[in-house]
Length: 520
Image 1 (cartoon, rainbow, N blue to C red):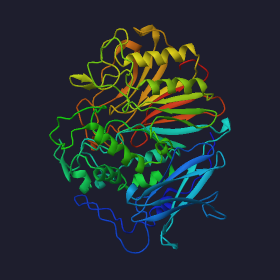
Image 2 (image 1 turned 180 degrees about the vertical axis):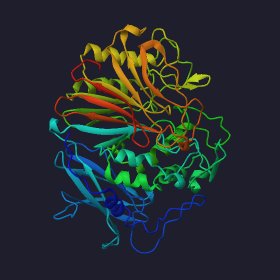
Image 3 (image 1 turned 30 degrees about the vertical axis):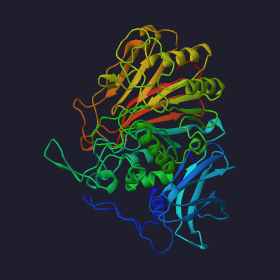
Image 4 (image 1 turned 90 degrees about the vertical axis):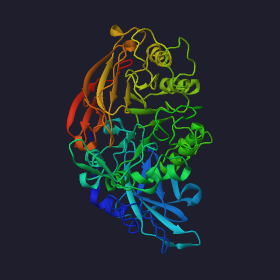
């Protein structure tokens, strides 16, 4: 696999933080500082790129005050002969965030960009440029594709701990020089307050950076926005964002644990009990803080397909917005399921249209692992190893469709359960047999509590080939069990290799898959 050389991490970090003098990190027990309001616009939260294709991408920034966003791109780090893109006016209506689409980019090339924030009343007054870089997807198969994936950030009260180096897992992912990062949901824990200190079982003390918005569960739009800003206080994440574009999906904790449309809360921490109201505020903040192409559409949907050249299409699912209510999940008929009918038909249609060698189905929840919402079921599997019931019916319909349409190269990636594992699904072991074998790989958390492995449901015949998980619940990141996965597609023979890795990059498990097989 060939990759163009990149600028050093430190040089990108230095450029991305050049405008951040007003955003010095708070002490471990202090609060996030307010923005300075004098001088020129600054972008102390860094930059990030997202939904990059062979010829396009999105660039994001946040200003400390009203400003016009301007993006310049170049083939070189010196920015000779830059191309200029005029972006939106950033104001309070979007929490001073903005995204600029870049189109007509060369494929398979390193794109250097810098963001300028201009005074709306005097365009000549601009802040220091904030720089980043990304690589467009290659239209040439021989170039190969490499990406990383994980999820679950700042969960269970484990936030940014400077004594441990903050979110250091991003350094290990960055070291692999991935083409992009697939974030499989739970980008924030809006329902998980962050306190200054947490007592660890061994007598040590975990120390968090804190902020005002993380002192309670998020209910207002300002509090949801503050949850997204909190993670950007981490230097490792900002540096990673400046070098690696993202494909982002959401799950439950962007709103609150195990939520579903129409739910009315009994949780006494909330004064707003209507989950639909909370979800609307969370979606707005989510759309402001990530560069996602479909969120700019009138329907504002999260699910989409991202084309990454001839080798790879990524099908990003939303298993949260369109689901039915959590229940025992044992109903014999379930037309809505976990995807909703419209999304399921979209997925079947796009899979059948795809000509990519590999079709990664990015699911924010696992298929065969039982995820409870006591006394109900939160994910798909409910523990009954017999014929498909409840939400399993939609998955059975999809797997049957893949088999009968002869769709090749499908691989499922997910996070959510806070351990890492590899499951192989085989009809000869299953109660439902009308499908071709396939793999599901689980990774995460990025920086959250780790939990024991979930039970398997035998309906689709899973065999847990590998698992690493603690034996006790909510192990802090100081105790390990933080994971990410890597996918490497060889441009010459088309093989796809999955590596499950620990937070320092150590490889725990490797599986290589051959191209051209129905299912996989």
